[in-house]
Image (tube, rainbow, N blue to C red):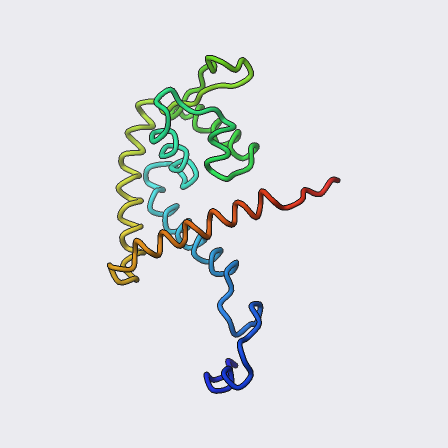
Length: 169
């Protein structure tokens, strides 16, 4: 049972972790899970996943020579093993290719193949439709500000993760 507004005023502000308050982590998780599942279902007919779409988008918006796996992992804010597995599946499906990096013998540049570009084009339309649909819940004049604020939150979440001490095993 949630306290009434008058109870809240009489007791003062609620602690940040109070069950009566909105909490950032569960809200972000609910939003991510909901959009990811909706996107996954809407992309199913194309045979790609939301993560594969993200790879396409990042690669196609980046350097035309392609990105290294390390660069892609950093931009995606993902785990190196997850990205390696994802790229292996995409390469096997003929969606991307790896070619030797011109300066780093240990690295490869990843590029989207024509088949991947075609799938990305169709998936992009699905993504844009879904984004428009979700943002329609907000008044039109508030949508860009919401995205700006969400970007600030995402940047600070990454900074917090980067600043966190790593535990040794």
